[in-house]
Image (cartoon, rainbow over all chains, first blue to last red; front, side, top):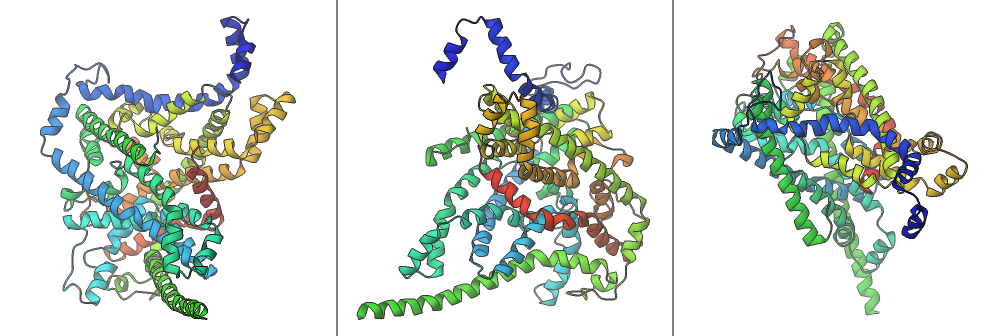
Length: 317
Length: 303
């Protein structure tokens, strides 16, 4: 291949080579062009605009024309009383989401895989995928209605079984925010995330099951010794991917679940950027906080990638 | 003799434990089913029951004192229909634009003889991990004079890198190279090959991506919140937030938008709104289920 290319190209000068290249490839470049332009305008131009974090914003001279201030806005964030709470809340929500949310679909997939009645299996599978298609706005309003202080189903149920004496205000409790956020997240995405594990389980060689049966293993032992090792590589890859995204706490759901009573636990970096950067128009300060978040994410990604490369030999880059 | 005895016992023993195991699986699966399905079912029955009974906790498994007050209110509410119309526009136009940009790019990136492909791929993938952040993006959109226009709600996120990877992987793995060589011998250009061979053979991945993009646009709320402040352009999800969340007892920020509903029936209206806004997706759900399973699988085989 390499040799072929060489012989094909010797004897041609640079201009002719260029001509040939374009004759063969201009259509491919044209097909890529809309995507390249879009990404340039809406991703790379904002990246260039990140220098706003180091400048004063001035309406007349635009994003890049303000006075250079260095790390002033970063220092302002680090010294502000919101620095520790937003960082802590972001980390707590992200870590709890992974610790609780990651194993759930794996367990679900193994349970579904063990259901022998095909019809029931189909019904369970179809049902658990549905919540994924519900929008965040609808999900949060369902939470607000079902957990409402005086009339919610959950409160009524807890009262009916005498677990609590009177009305409990779950939505207004700071300590209830993280569990509520994480568990409803599991409720919504567990089914969807289990698809990949179910598929991995269905491709296990059936001879292994027969061999296991002959050895006298029961179903529990079969599950642990055949099923689990079979999906372990999939589990590892998804774990790495998830860890690299750890601080990307979704803005939408946190923002919609916020109320004045739980703000102490629910103000995360991304919602803070929105509050100061867009709503109160402190553009430079907002840009600095946002850049700080991106930087942490990036460090996390590189770190996870490095560790996973060392431990398992697989990595993204 | 002893051997068979041992074997018999172990078979018997394992069948006992297997029966317990089977029962445990059954119980767990029923519990999971109830936890997922009950909230959904509850919203349905609460939307057609007497709100007072619902609030007292008297409605549990079947609707009681059936009435359609909530739905009647919605039918008269112009905001919802306006939001519906806007959302349909954004879903149709946005998804069409997504596909027109994603598929050709995916094809170009799937050509192994296209030497720039790794560089271009990096150009796309880099944006998955690094971004300018919310404020600089907002300033860019603002500099383009696109704030509060319908255009930005159609155009924003015109190409999703993850979906691009899915499409590229599919084209690369499931369309044999022999076809390309034969087409080139017949004098086919990239354009004709793409239109006549690649697109017809990519129906599976095209339906998956249409589904992903359409669901994204249907449920998108973030972009409308940030980049649009005109009530006229508001998609359904923004209208839903006004009705469902800002009407809350402790509304966050904006100071509740009173929808004009009486308090006693406000909840029934909310349940009905949830049903009406989620129904389209739930209706097509049975038809698309096999496609999204396929989509997850294609996405899993990263190229």
